[in-house]
Picture (cartoon, one colour):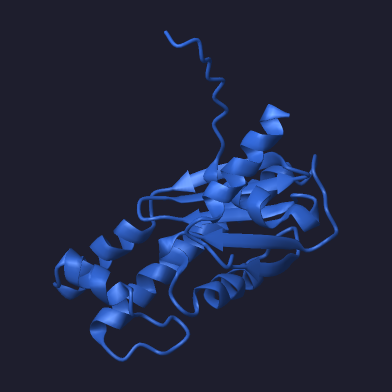
Length: 187
């Protein structure tokens, strides 16, 4: 009615992370958004998505599984999860349950990366180490990036992993990447 036309261009939030944080690396790398409901992942080369996937085993899943294991409420687990330090050995049953679920979530994610790269190795190759950008509330605990890096390094991948990058503003990094994509689409 007003004469305005919207030409929407949806973007994967993990690809938005690559746009926001890997401009100096020619928008090449892996973006992973660890949200409450899902883990969204995208491998991009020169700003083009090569493969992407999403898994539902993320923050809310950690809460549910740790609550089942301990007999505590989901809200209690969620509160305790905000205090956890994944770089330290757990000292309580709740910390052990949360830490275990984090490890399982990371393993599921890394297995998805392994499958994605095994599906494309004949068509896309790189010798340079691939940086990984992580964001989202589920990736906020201390020690998370180190646990992810350790799991990636222990898994036989057809690529070398570079740095694990945690943006200075991880809760706004996706929005910044969406803005960059919108500006590029408008020009």
